[in-house]
Length: 453
Image (cartoon, rainbow, N blue to C red; front, side, top):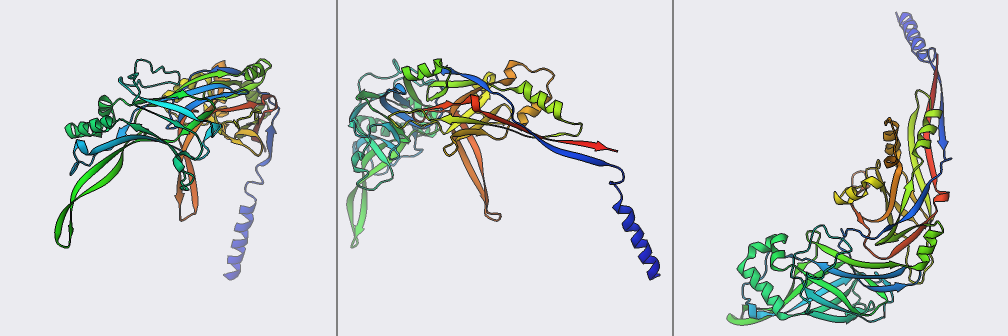
């Protein structure tokens, strides 16, 4: 019986080892095609929709870039509660507008003195709101505050070794008292940004004099300074006491409307470059690049070279980028969006993020001086399914954008994943770059397999 079992086991092994190889033989090849040509040209992009908390303030004349100025209009989100116990309207001592920025977060000269003025809005800001917004008619022309500031060691921030710089503007005591009384009369309005805007539409902050710097304001608040009356017990004796307090009761946040009112005149140098055929992206307003993808050639390459069992592996594009020489340290935008031209307005209006089918993002690589779109496979897959390809399918826009992201981590596997949460038109600081489309590289990779009986 042991012998019979051994014979049976051997017979089973022989039969399974020949299945497949006796029926099919195949030949597998990985094909990489990078013979495609990209074309495009610079187009004007004079208006963008501000969807960022970064506020640009100042004026800059840069020979190689152009002349740019930016004022600010903004609403404020109030705190839900305010301290009223032991505090009366007469205890409100003062109010201050404080604008914060990271050290060095400006373009231009840090030492040049510049002036600003603050006005109270009298009308509700429109939504959506764009960079060409004209605040005339929306504010009381009598300023409620002003100051002179620089971009260096503001208010001794560097001496105090703080991680930020700040510009402080004294506001009327009457404004702080009015906001305090508004809360006492109608605290429910402070729970709704829309209702609060009816009480206090916001501020208009403008340049009053000076040129040479654009500040990147990352956070804006209104602080109230007040006295609080209380009682303390010392040695079993109750005594009256007064505390001097300060609270940031109002802030510019994503829940309210804020806008950079930008005026930009492109330099003669950049205009001449585009006339000579250079493809430029200039931001926050200025220029973008209209790009024509060789979609029909990509389809032909795949269909002509693929077999019946072929698989589309990947499609990527790398665009060389060149920094434009200037005296103000103006650099290429960190991120650019590539989106179908017919979908661009809808993309921003609906707060979309890249789907790697009709829209893609790339980050500037300072080591290789390039923007790399690494995952475009879904785009070509969708084109392969269409019966007819039109210009709307292969005409794209390359434009500068701001990208916000969040990261999640898994402590067990010690991994983290970063997700893009928002993509908005670039409104951060002056930026410009020259794209070398003539040397752009598109790489199509697919696997083809031939089966033979």
